[in-house]
Image 1 (tube, rainbow, N blue to C red):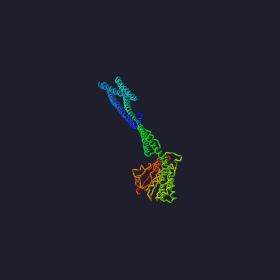
Image 2: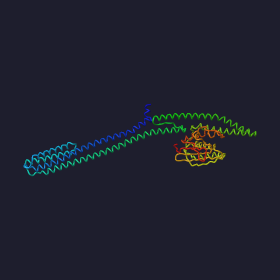
Image 3: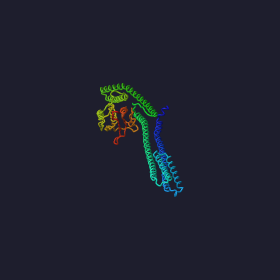
Image 4: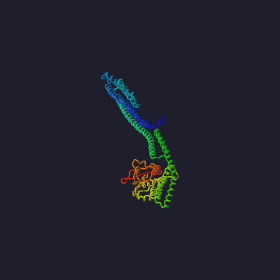
Length: 486
């Protein structure tokens, strides 16, 4: 039981919401950590570039200072004009230059910058050695300008290499940021698609189960009890489907019991009706032979009432066999207009006896159906319209189709059906309230109940709709799907 609860609608909705929100939460965390990493990388790179830029600035400043003091020391190399503090100043400049260069080399620099730094240090040492040799040997002409020029070129190369390194780092940082942005974008799209797919799957499962429930309820309300009810989906919806299937089986059993009772009742009254029919005909013959007009009229009225009972017997027998499948009940493509015309021709005598005007608007329609049952539908509806139409009344019939279904409409000028009884009119032995207290001698039957069952069998609908503004009778609308898959 606990396992079933895990697949209930409530659990699926909670689980679905959790799973749907999880990718967004993961994406948010991923974006947060990515931004944090990029921020840390940016701060680290900025600090590194700042330190390198600051260090190279100090190195270049000290290089310029040591070159100026070295030149001044060379110019004042004559002991007569040279002051002791000038050599000390030069030595201090050398120490400051080496310290600045060492600070630069201690930073995280590439090999090329390190080589240029060592080269600059070596060239400064060459200048120092030449200056020292010049002082010791007291020579007047030295290649000191070439040494200074090489020192400056190396310093400039070092500065240029630092700038190039900074540019490369910025470009690398931009490329990494762009790659991270693309990665995050595609990862977000992937997570969104996964979440969307899961939501669609979950909604399809729940929606299909709800749709199956809706169709099951519709079939039960329409008394379409042929197809079993099986709901595939969450456990609680499946449980509802099981209860509806149990209700359908109860309806089937009730319907079968009702039809069995009607069948047995029809068979029981068949023999007495035949006997009374024979007696009535005998009485008519006797009254005719004895020239007794009053007895003959009574016998004829009795025979007319017996014929009504015989009609009712046939309807009961047909109603009791609604769920019996025979070889003749095979669906085929049928010309509906031809079937309707044949039914109209069969009722010409009844129409003429009551002087009823029939207005027909019939279009050619082809329907995949059981022809005999379609004939019965038209026959019962037209018979009812004629039965309840007044003398010299009118009946209107419309037959047409659209892309999906056939529509047949019939309207008479009879007493009509109260709106509260529009659904009950298709029940067996229904009698309209509008006929209570009238002199209408027609007994209630099962004709419309048979019509409804045949229409349901073809996945169609039948209903009483509002009458036209110019008429006050009953207006019946029948809709039956056209396709062979129906």
